[in-house]
Image (tube, rainbow, N blue to C red):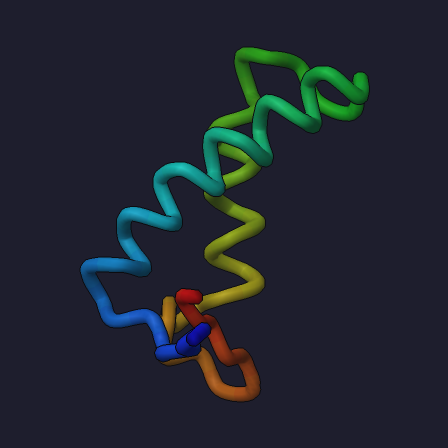
Length: 64
């Protein structure tokens, strides 16, 4: 059986650190960002898109 549960704060933090790193790497590989600026820009994007983290309104983050 597959269960979906909303991410809690600890799970979100683990997800976020991995997601930011991966997103930054993908942007560098695609040639969109320079390596030295990529992590900062990725962090800024996640902050803009999810300003209240896992509790950002109209965003539903689940773990499977």
